[in-house]
Image (cartoon, rainbow, N blue to C red; front, side):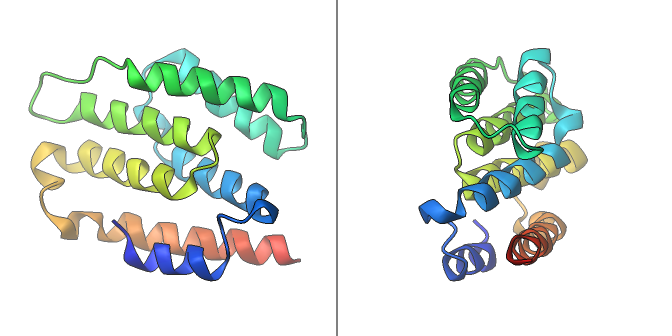
Length: 152
């Protein structure tokens, strides 16, 4: 949990209907940051669909379809039997994409942080809250930058 990010999101009214684009952009940024952990080309295609939406395709029907597909794929990811956490990083990155597409930006951020920590330090690293510090700091800077750009 990133308490500072939660506070910033509340101050920005990130859950408000008028903040949909910011929510999607932030979720996208977090998922994009861990894109290299994605293993399934279909999940990559879902993330690319969100990229296209953010670039100007503003119809919701394709976005909703992509969100449903990403959720299904993330829920059925086989995970990892290894102790190095690589498969766990892929699962978490897939969940980040699914949550980003569903407009659940804070959940996307949390899964992306797990993916980053699993991928960098393996399973043991996620047990150390300090391992999340760099990713949480990046997320705070990213949300602030996106919010600032939205206001312009």
